[in-house]
Image 1 (tube, rainbow, N blue to C red):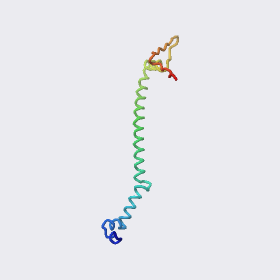
Image 2 (cartoon, helix red, strand yellow):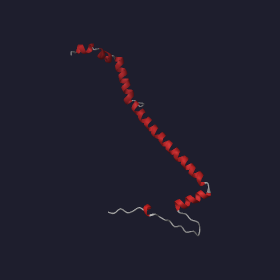
Image 3 (cartoon, rainbow, N blue to C red):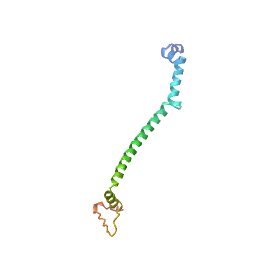
Image 4 (cartoon, one colour):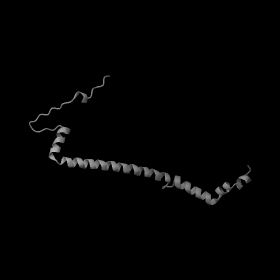
Length: 110
């Protein structure tokens, strides 16, 4: 193909138009190089989604802890929790911890 034949092609004439070239450069600039580019905008959207997931997780934890605090307002429940979790005892009381054989971790043989 000769240069004159290429210049007569309708697509080459269309893309060679100065307004089309400016539009292509503008779109390329906005997608890749601008401070508000599509790529940066996409990264920020992903970050927002991750933060919203974290907020949802922590809200569930807060609700769970509020339920636990409400449960601990009852003195019987608090005593039961302290005895089971921290092995606390009343004065002049002995506590025996019974461990079943299957609950004891066995040492690995080397």
